[in-house]
Amino acid sequence: MVSLKSVMGLPGRALCGFVESVFKLMNVGLSVPDHTTISRRLKHLDVKLPVKPTSDKRHVVIDSTGIKVYGEGEWKTREHGVSKRHTWRKLHLAVDEATGEILSSVVTDNSCHDSGATPRRFAALGNAHQDSEVLGELFDEIDEPISQVGADGAYDTAACYDYIEERDATAAIPPQRNAKIWFHGNRKAPPHPRDENLRRIRLVGRGKWKREINYHRRSLAETTMFRLKTAFGGKVSSRKMNRQENELKVQCLVLNRMIQVAKPDSYVC
Image (tube, rainbow, N blue to C red; front, side, top):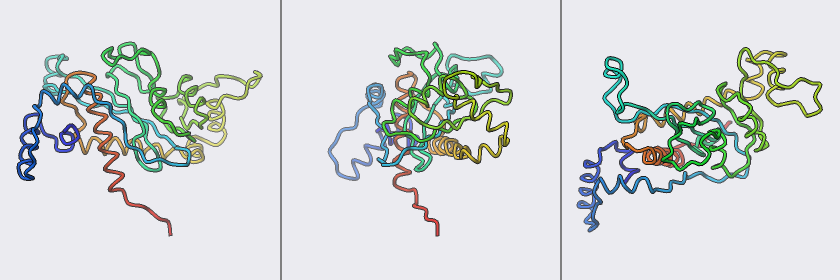
């Protein structure tokens, strides 16, 4: 029901009426739950994203986007100030560069930085590590080995590099324009991957470094965001954080099903 609601873009009561009419045409003697029952059960859903298995290491690209929540529009907020009924959530996605499938997702409030959750993360999620990095939470849902992680400059933090190093992956994250070397060559430890990227950029230039490290494949994460917002409107209708999280996970699930069924196979002749 929740998947059908996301695809059709129907309100709760309209969804129930639509399903009842379909059952009637099919001569199916099933009862349709009330829209309030569907809403209550939404928070208890255990949503697992369907991902095709692979024997190769995954090239993961990371990005985040804002998702609108119910409200009265930007004009009222601009004219009369922020309303408690007008807000938005931040959806963080890890996408497989080769297949376009969403491997994992994390939903936070709008005060969260791209690379990590703040202490204002909603307690309704039951999250015991509120200060943890979002990147680490995304990796927790990816079981396969990772070859490379592509992300924009917002993820240029020590914690993000630590998480990538734990997965034995290459970090394709451009340092900030005014970046400085973190660890100089006189220490006994191996060179830090971020410092090595920065040295290479200084040597050959940022554009050539991005081509060498295949950084431009990160744009596929933005393509996935565009597909999700085009298909589902870039909004959620639930009013509680745990239900909003599951509603967005269902949208990711449906998007994976769509790309698994409809994406053509490309061959180079």
